Length: 276
Ligand SMILES: [Zn+2]
Image (cartoon, rainbow, N blue to C red; front, side, top):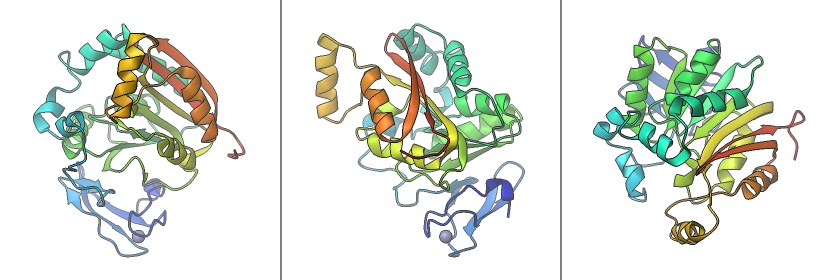
């Protein structure tokens, strides 16, 4: 039993604190729940906390299917894809964007960070660099992204990141156990976001901060096109006021938002008493 991973919740019995991980130097050798005995499926050293989601879900959108490809994962962070899109969509560099997120995440005694829809671990690695003593969970549904993330983290000698396959609608963490939750550049892929806010509220410790960025619902012609995309459940776009209201409804307050072209970079906090 690795007590530092006591925040993990079993996907079968949904009880926390009983996950036993047999950690090998560069991978997980075995993972099971000592409460119900459930053996988690393992894929190349990555434990699967979302066995209820098929590895290739037919309901996924084309971009989400692309995320499952090892070839796409290999150049995901490179100048020809994410770095290019960041510059185009926000006008700032990936490095500047990352610094904004880390600054919004603040400081303090941080023990746990969950990077949701972590992809190849760009933000998880940065959080690991900023909070070297914290346990960082990198969670995504795509195994090829996670495998790439694991490789990049090992290459940078960042051994505090545990990459997990997980479902953003059913996060495998105990209530009130995570100090910082981050989700960048992925929220627009989900058409139903309110349950995600509720899950983030559930897992955050009172006083914990949620950081992220998503896409701006731009007034004018773009808004009509974006609304059509939302009606067809192709993407979600946000206006700062609406995003702040939704997060508040889910229990997350102190909303702060900075817009850079189509990028909304934001943070929100779970209040100390953790109550709505
Ligand atoms: Zn269990």
